[in-house]
Each structure stands twice: as structure tokens, then as C-alpha cells.
Image 1 (cartoon, rainbow, N blue to C red):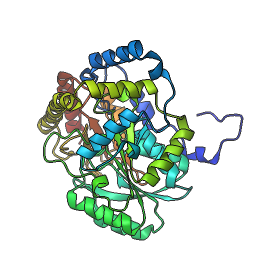
Image 2 (image 1 turned 30 degrees about the horizontal axis):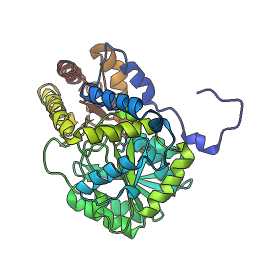
Image 3 (image 1 turned 180 degrees about the vertical axis):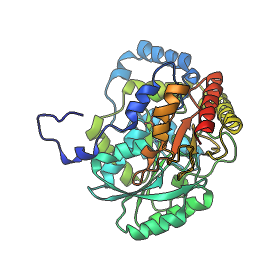
Image 4 (image 1 turned 180 degrees about the horizontal axis):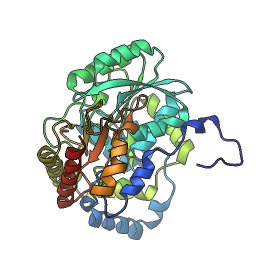
Length: 406
Ligand code: PMP
């Protein structure tokens, strides 16, 4: 980025284009099979149903859906979200719900709520890149916590919190995390809240993939287990309906929701009335759960196809997660000088040097998901947006090159 002819605020020092932007741009070439973006499968969007509710709104109720509404969001939609949360074990009313521009806005507002420059944010290691981007303008420092197949390791969390007694915010994606696909185990959910209570943290529970479970039993949300009103729970319509609607929700204690509402008002006044009204009308006229019941087997199939193709074609030395839901498989390449070239394996280098030019396949190199010490030997692979045949071909070509390289 060039330097502008005026003074930039200090917070802009942390606001930079991500190193992966260029790589994602290369991945946008139609000849490339990209496992990079975390896009839902667009062929599953209920386009006709949404077309019908938008037309109905504009023809029958034209002006109202184009007017300003309350900053916290259209009451009917807040009520529907409250009912969904109640069915998921956390009784809510419409007043407890704030409609936001996707979960992403909740991350921005949460950091504004509690983080002053230099304050510590605790995260899974690795964590969602978009959260690091959202938090950056508040100039935080990070305390990452060891994360395994059962999510954030709460023994390590206890140690990290001893080291950072003033930590303000704990950010977690407990269900099918982005990027690892890991789900936080039940006993860890309880322990995490105990530690948050002891250390007076705001817990941000980010749940965009919660409904995308392909096997196993659902675990209770941190929101439903919280006894002190310190969980700010974020949800999103992006993966269950369509991300272009830019609709999500935030809920927590009345104190938190009210203050978040003030920050939301300052940021953008309100979400689009039209999109809120159309989504409310969709939820009224159609069955979202039935829509999901049609979509989930498609994602489950793609996950299974990706894992089976990796099993058949990848070297054993490449470790991969087996997520019970969500959209991502996380790869760990051998660390240390065990590669054919005698170099440490660098997933970004492999992508640029070999994978893109030879196999025309892209993923997101993992380093970018680490808030502090960036580990080069990982990649995030999304199985959601690629047609079956291309998925198998792309993963197979990748496996062949890995066999050669490792
Ligand atoms: N949190 C996580 C963990 C995500 O993966 C995403 C989207 N990829 C978001 C939040 C933001 O999504 P949205 O703003 O579309 O709800």
C-alpha cells in the first residue's frame, strides 16, 4: 500500500492487507481448483424462495421494507432468532437479540466493547483470520492457547491466564472451528467458563457452523452454560441461508446487548430493512430446518469425499483433521527438515512454487491463522464450494505433488 499524503491514526498500523489476499487472487483464476475460500455451496441457496419473498415484500408492502427501522433490528426477525436460540438451550426473548451484519460485525463490536490498546485477547491457536482482522483496529496483543482435536486445551488456558492476569476477551469458535474443524469437548466447555469467571473475561462464542454437524451429538453452547452473563454469543445466517444477506445475531446479558446496540448504531445505524424483512418472511413461509436437512448431506458427502481422496493419495506424513461438521479440513505437513529438499516445509512456498503452477490447486496457507508465532507447515482446505469431480481431481493432483516433495 502506498503512503497517503495525510496523517494516519495510530490504529492503522495494525490494519494491513493480509498476505493471503494475493494468493486468493491467484486462486480466483477459473482454471484453478480452489479449496481456499470458505464459501457455502451457492447451488444450495434457496434462490426461488427468496425471490418470491422479496417480490412479495416490494409489491405488497413496498414502502415499509424500504424504511429505516430500529437499530437493534426488525422485531419480527429478532423474535425468530430468539426462538431458534431458545430451541438450542438458551431461552431468549426478542429484546435479548441484536441483529448484526454477519458474525463479522459482532467481532468488531465485541473488541470495541472491551479492548483498549495493548489489552490481551485470548484465542485458540490457530484462530479465525477474520477475527484477527476485526480486532486489529483496537490494537490488541494476543495470548494464543494450545488447541487440539477437542478444541482449546483448558489446562493450557489456565496457564495462559496466569501469565496474562489482565486479559480482557476470550475468543472461541467452539463448533467446527475455522480453520481446524475442531469442536470444543463438553468438559472443556465447563472448564473454560470456570476460568473465564475466575479471570473476569468476556467470552465471545462465535458459532457460524453450529448447524453444520454431519455426525455425532450436538454439544451445549457456552451461552446456555453461562451463569454469570459473560458470554457474548454470535450467530449467522451466512452458512444456513446465504452470506450475501449479511445477517447475523448477537446475544448475551442485557448489559452487553444494550452497549453493543449503541456501538452498532454508531457503526451503521442498522442492517438493511429489506434483507431483514425478506429473511423474516422466508422464515415465516418456509422451513429453514428442512432446507438445512437437504443441504447438510451434500456437505457431509463432500467432506467424506475429500478425506477419502486424501487417504488414498496423500503421504501418511501429512496429518489431517476429521471434522464432525463445518467446512474445513486442516493439514499439518511434517515439521523440521524432513522434506525431500532438506528444507522445512512451508505451505505458502509450496503453493506458489509447485501447487499453483503444476496442479492448478489452491488452499489457504496456515501461517496466517496464528496470532503470534506463525507456523509455516499447515494449510486450510475447504470442501464446500468445489464440485465432486473437480474436488477428487484437485486433491489427487495435490497428493501426487506432495508424494514427490516429501
Ligand atoms: N466467524 C467465523 C469463524 C467464520 O468462519 C466466519 C465466516 N467465514 C465469520 C465469523 C463471519 O461470517 P459472517 O460475517 O458472514 O457471518
